[in-house]
Amino acid sequence: MSEVATWPDVFDVETYTAPQMHDEAQAQIVAGNLTEDASSDVVPSGPGYLAWLNSKGFPTDPNQYPIVDVVDDGIDAGVAATPLHPIFIPWGAVPTPAGSPS
Image: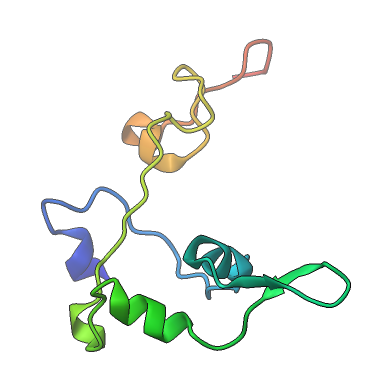
């Protein structure tokens, strides 16, 4: 990990958090893999997601999968004068809130 932190295009390295599954249904909604059941409820139409990915030209070799990097354009909590994340605190000097003993 320390080697990665020295790369010129890396600005932050944080502790690994195991991924959790969230909203996998959205992928099926976007793919249009929905149908109505006997009660007129909208439900997934069943297998077919892999075929849909293939039809869109997604690679089948995991080494060729695209890497998606989502970066927030905000600064920490939105207040530049009082950042919360250590990467935004110059020289690690945590600012003392007004009215606090120094």
